[in-house]
Image (cartoon, rainbow, N blue to C red):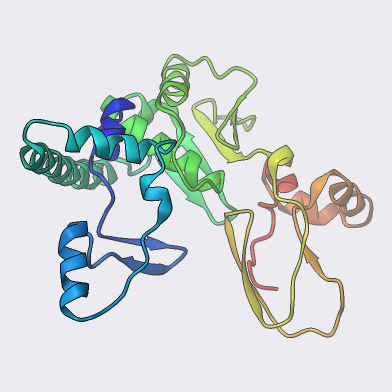
Length: 272
């Protein structure tokens, strides 16, 4: 929390690390999160259990070690720790409330499509509270771009302002995504948010009866097959050209911008 204060983090960052989270569908629980190092060591000593100390915890080149030394050097170490814990608790509670209210306000603003992209109604987006628009925009970019973390606030704020002021123009990129204006008739108020084709993960080999997360975006369940050297990847320009020459009617049925199809968002069925 102290490191994030030094970086100027907002509510999300100051909430600290959660004692439980979910990563790729796996529940991660930190049951010892609220215990101090001394309490853990005392418990181990009382149970005649050895442990291993991580040497990096004493390496001053790491920022976390510098912060720990700063806390230890304070006049009242326990008071400072308690205040930081209180701050994290208050911020985490505020974050949960804001996220709940934001979800209630987003109906009709963002639409997530099964092909892995978002459409954004700019008329409704402009009516959101700034906190709601920034949070929802960050989440859409993170999701559509297959990113683990949210974009930096300064870049996010600039994009948010450009959307509100109608300055997207021919399109822009941020956080592994492209943001572009719909070219369909009567959709002047619709923006597309989709994976930037140039950054899509390279083709990767897959095995029978396996499950993978491709490009940080698509969960793919691979069925049983007898073919060797099977790979999964985005359609790409060459693949698009092949289909355009041999199955043009198939492309005509997919009413999506070409770049979304190129980036791997043109297949409805995620199962192979």
